[in-house]
Image: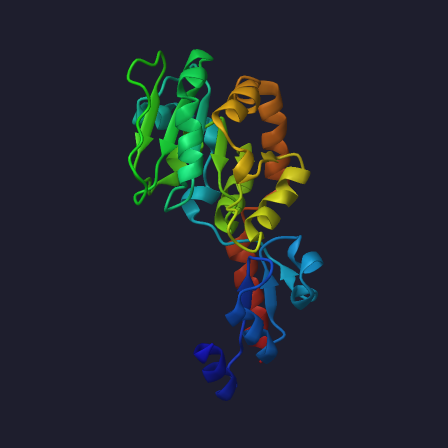
Length: 261
């Protein structure tokens, strides 16, 4: 908020880029000082009154994500993690801090996943308690405390199980990776709002945190992970919804704001 006030007093152009619904407190206050408001997703101007006039520009993503060719990078990414090239891979990540409920549900279904021939690449989260799969699984189940190069995980995966943070939704949709979203339950439902549009577009599934369990994974995740045609259709739908040009679109928006000052 102090930055908005300082810019306004100096008559400097102010540009706001918001990716959540509802917008954060600072951005809501900042909108009083500017008409140059951009949104990351198409659903935001529809769901938030304060974003009615916002221009949808997408979300700026790292070049390593926007340039990712999953098919071309798949074999090398799988070799990097010690995964087999011939079996489907479920990529599990609860965000930078991990997610205990996701961890326990997937670990609880480790034997069923492995028996079905589904490999798992599981980012536990640096602050979460260590969990380990059984040691006698017939296919790889790889656990990591943290993964800084998410593009490697995306390239290795056929399907992702993740939270619904704005950046996660933007990245996963942009690269056309089918995903099962488990929104963080203890908030204002912004993660559910983030994930629902791509799910409605056909690019993934949505499950409440309270419903996620080893049994749900066995009944829902395993059949999906073993269905390449369905995964291909979901991936195409995700890619059609997502966009990789958020950085350029936002930069153009900033230039327009400066030119109009």
